Amino acid sequence: MSNSVGAVIVAAGRGTRMGTVESKQYLLLQGKPIIVHTLEVFQRHPLISQIVLVTGKEDVDRCREWVKTYRLDKVISVVTGGSERQHSVHRGLRHLQTAWVMVHDGVRPFVQINEITACYELAREIGASVLAVPVKDTIKQVDKDGKVLSTPDRRSLWAIQTPQTFRLSELLAAYESAERDGFLGTDDSSLAERSGIPVAVVEGSYANIKITTPEDLDFAEFTQRSRGEVQT
Ligand SMILES: Nc1ccn([C@@H]2O[C@H](COP(=O)(O)OP(=O)(O)OP(=O)(O)O)[C@@H](O)[C@H]2O)c(=O)n1
Ligand SMILES: C[C@](O)(CO)[C@H](O)COP(=O)(O)O
Image (tube, rainbow, N blue to C red; front, side):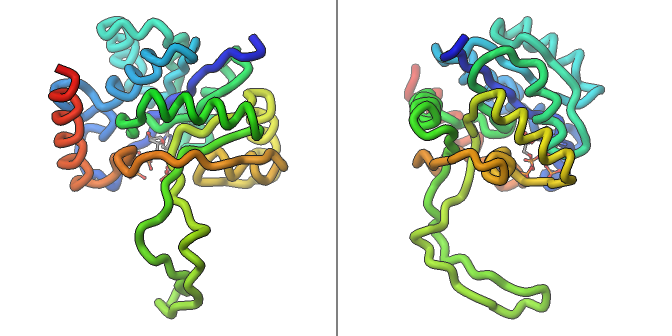
């Protein structure tokens, strides 16, 4: 139990920026739903013993079917999410029984096995970890009228991805505290940070995109095809 690792995969969003009728996590990539590609990476990882999939109420049945069809036997529960990502993660966390948890976006199917391992190892050492990449562009802080306020030093800026790894009990406490205080964050680490949990970054890959807008689908098709060709 002390080293056991579970994953909460969140897929209860509506994908409004993608603009498709079908929610983006269920669009097909090389003939398979994006969410299944994501689940398969965690299913394959030897460290992961349990997976909780969080999805929309109307999608629970088809997700359970895919769990059977694709033999995703580490998936212990398919549960319904909430109106914000944070609520969906919180619901998922309550169903895990492991010591450690990795929270991951269902629409990041290109995370690699070695990245998951590195995230777990750094979390064990530091307390918590997030996968991330250094930003490539210059970032400016801009006010509501479009006026540039400052240019932060790029060397200290990282674009944060998932997985994000924590002790399950500590992350649950951070989620309870955020709920009590009405704090809404855009990632899990921001809740951990405000609870005083030390978090460190693991340098990942620019390929671990969050499929968000239509142009991401071209990249996703290309990446999935080329990875398939390398494996065959
Ligand atoms: N209420 C929500 C919102 C988001 N997510 C999940 O969190 C991940 C990251 O969210 P994002 O890519 O921003 O997805 P959406 O919220 O679906 O996209 P949009 O903001 O364009 O509607 C996705 O796997 C999404 O399904 C979730 O489980 N529950
Ligand atoms: C958690 C996350 O993937 C980190 O990049 C991201 O913040 C989630 O995106 P959302 O738009 O806030 O749902």
